[in-house]
Image (cartoon, rainbow over all chains, first blue to last red; front, side):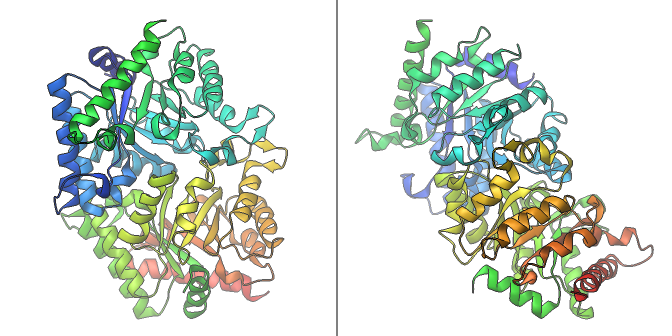
Length: 283
Length: 283
């Protein structure tokens, strides 16, 4: 099964287009394990158990490599274990690594992500051009590869908004993605720039190809669902896209005093699923 | 001691501006260890011993993360061990990771590279803007951070050569580096584009700031020293720059039949040091 089909199937099965970002920070995990890796694993295992109990699910998970790697081998062991755990339950795992390198190096990164960590998809940076995308999409046609187009952060414009004869750089990258197209290729577009997101979605629609969007930036970064979601209605299946939420779900216990962290996380996930359904249900 | 001072001191001490890229591939390492991590460690340990014996040295080493990570934990343990080993002998270690992420993620990557792996410098991708550079250069002022400007690969032009009102994107990034300047910041510019390298070096000279270049692409990628080195004579100390060579030194035994791999590697390193000295000595 290729990644695009997986996205559609899972979305239907779990009635969600939410991607649960998994960004562990020792100081925010309310567990007293001495081994940080075991604390991280236990934290996300409890959230998974609670999701199963309440039958509330995301439609993908996105562990961010940096958050695990900062804790050295213990953190990376937790990452390896959590990918296996969540995949076993049927969730597509997007390993957020934002790799960008060439030739044998890119091949080695693809091996790391798809063979060692066994992820279903990765995120990639386009700065080095097609050489840095090719080894992921051509050698692993059943996997996914989301290329950064317009990112959610404040200074994303430093490079991405620079004007060129064909529009800003992010538009140029969107067109390159079409040129580089293979079934698993997708795009990262931040929810904090809804106008640019609309533009990019339109560029993709005009090709008739299904290019899944991974949309970070809702919640703590300030992205607004009302202004983002309408751009996903594109004639094709809008369920191929994913709205990512990380800390607002991971650490929801901070907003719900007295509640167990896993219960709080699932409550926040449920609210996000419902909010999306309320907006999209009208269409 | 900050990174720039380290670059100058080491260059003087070892009479070299070569950066030894350390890109392990199991199939190219002529050792029969069952544990690939131990094979990698032993391979580069033997090369270090041979360098000490012959008193022939590089002026930095650059392990490329992907080559280690592709072998999972065994590979990453070798990386961790080799960084400690080479640093102990006084070599600046540039961890080639090409990371590019924002906020807490960028902070976590900086922690991974500078606190867990304990590298002296890293490589970074500029696509996400200053948010992705800031946590490395501001939080670790004594460390180095080389930002990709014009890379050595064929398709580097896909994004980097796109014209803008201020010249191609790589020029725009070079000017951003000046804007973002702090003592540890440097630039990656491929030897395969000598004309662009000259241009970028000139942009940096015009600011009066010392911005170290990391120059991959000589050797197997076809970069030519005669056309690259003159651009490094800039009035300031040209010994802050580094010419990287990876596989041409690592696997030099393939070119010298019957020779031990460590002897062959040191022979290739010596030739590169001498070739550079022959060209720069005339100036």
